[in-house]
Image 1 (cartoon, helix red, strand yellow):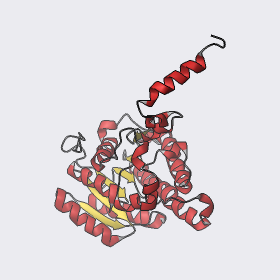
Image 2 (cartoon, rainbow, N blue to C red; image 1 turned 90 degrees about the vertical axis):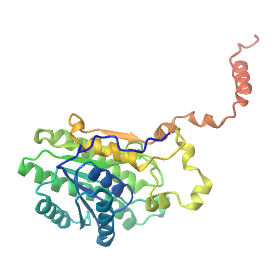
Image 3 (cartoon, one colour; image 1 turned 90 degrees about the horizontal axis):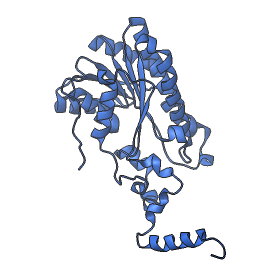
Image 4 (spheres, helix red, strand yellow; image 1 turned 180 degrees about the horizontal axis):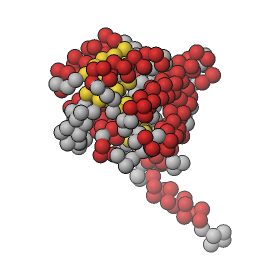
Length: 294
C-alpha cells in the first residue's frame, strides 16, 4: 500500500517563505501545495503568468494559504531580482528556495542544434546558479539563515545518453550544491538536492516517454519496486529538507526512485529469467565448474 499522505506535523513550515521556481504546474505545484499545508507562504514563479495565477487560485482554495504568483524567466537575472524584491515586500523575508525549473527532451545528441543544447543548459544550470546566487547574496547581506533545495536527477552523477544537455546541466547544478554547502555553511545557509526517479506529470512525462517510445520500452521494467512515484512522496521529502528538521544536513543529494538507479547493475536483467529456467542454468554452471576429466 502506498502512503501518499503528508508526513510532517502541522505547522512544520509555519512563518517560512519559500520561492518555488516552476511552481505553476507538475511537481513544483504539488510541492508548493504541501508547503502551504504546512504553514509556509509560497511564491510560485515561471514564465507564464496566466498559468501561475490559475495555479495560485487553485492552491489558495485548496489550502487557505498565502500564494504569490510572479512571472520570471530564470535565465534573466533582472527578473530574478524583481521576484526577490516583490517577495520581501509582500512577506517580509525569504527563508527557502526550491530550484525546480527545468527543461528536457529525448534525442540522439548528434541531432541537436547548438540552440537546442543551450536552451536546456540555460534553464537548468544557468537559471539555478542565477537564482541561488541572488538569494544567497540577499541572505548573507541580511544575516538570514536560508535553505536551498535543488531538484536534480539520478543521471546527474551517472550520466545518460539521449538526454545529454540535461545531464550536463543537472551535473553542474549538483556540484553547485555541494560546493556552496561547504562555502556558505558559515552563514547558516544549507543546500541540498533530491534526485527523483519517474514521477509522472502531464508535460514532462509525455516529452520523455512519448507513445512510440513507451511501446518499445516499459519505463516500469527498470524500477525494482515496479511503480512510479506519487507526488506526495516527493513533496514529503522536499518539505523535510526545507524544514528545520533537517538542520544538520547540507551538501547532500537524496535519491527517491524506487530503486531505478540500482538496475544498472550488470546482472540485474536476470530478473527476466523464468523461475523454471534456473534449474537448467544451475546444471550448466555445475557442468562448467566440473574439473576436466572428472
